[in-house]
Length: 79
Image 1 (cartoon, rainbow, N blue to C red):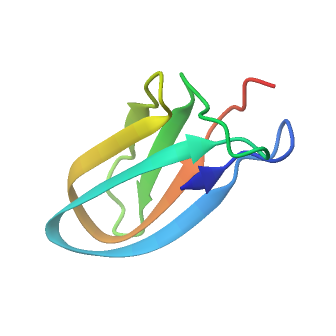
Image 2: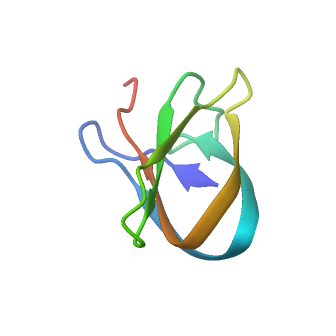
């Protein structure tokens, strides 16, 4: 899970992916409640363009086909 804590501070998670890896997760606030409609960016350290997903009503998001080390960043908290 990515936890949203303070407005303006996008939390991040760094993950090492194998070729064509899939990441799925859930964005929650400081109370553990689902955070819907939060843009999540997957930034590759291989120089590839970032991938972007939007969390759903239950805070869930997913990415497929990611390569190498990837950093996930919640771009803009809604609070």
